[in-house]
Length: 359
Image 1 (tube, rainbow, N blue to C red):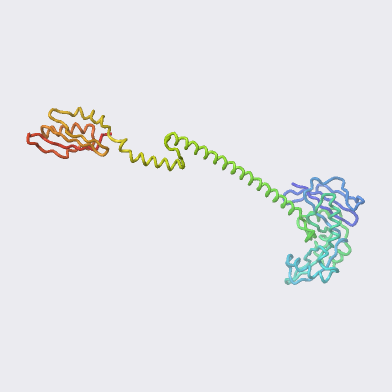
Image 2: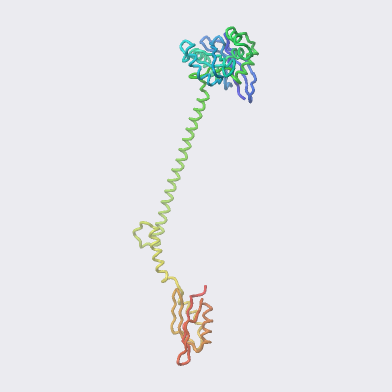
């Protein structure tokens, strides 16, 4: 809900109707009578702090009129062509006036139009008289004009009412004021005298939004900058830690350029030396081989490397050889007799190959 002031300027005084608006309906709350302050402005019994919007009605005595016949009835198009029509009818042309049109009658695509106008200077003075009250009317209309053309009547009667207005009672004026707020008959706040408060407010809000947007961007950029600096420090700390660790592992490297690249080079070297460090443990192998020793069986050659284990020897018979194989399978994988042949002394020469120790 918000308060709205309708300023009804009459020939001799100014009435102010304070109304409240809820939804789409208006309700009269108070009526104030303004008085002249002796300086060309108005005094009111109370201030209008609660008023959020305002309208102004001018008396017919301040307005001038022309009736024109135009070959169309679209109101916007009428307003576009009126300056050219009025240039030839008004002294000084249309540049010095503010005007609006009301359609009196339409027939066969043609229209009779009532043009209401006032000089720009005169309207400016009226608006300036309201400035001390901190009032900027959204719409400038006329209650008396709305009454004259608001009822079915001939153009002659309308013309007579415009020249000799009938007195309106206060209640009638209030009722017409409400209708004018809902749908104004005319609005003389046009051109350079247009109502700009909404545009200024929107502009101010846009400016505030732009400033807030810039501040938000600065905050975001500051946060990004802090994160970048923090990340760089963390990266520097990690690099320093990597260098210290590398130096402790490879103290012989005095010149460190790229720890990762140099580490990969050392890894490659270690890979090449892997065969020298990794393989079958010979001592453990011989300890496991001792229990397999049988009477008449001996090994003449034992080769142990990473790829395979090779055993050569002699035994009394093939059954002894088979028993040797069984004993070896207890701790070796993929044991195979690759060669077995008799000697002149009726012994068996053999060769046994294994893949390596069982896991």
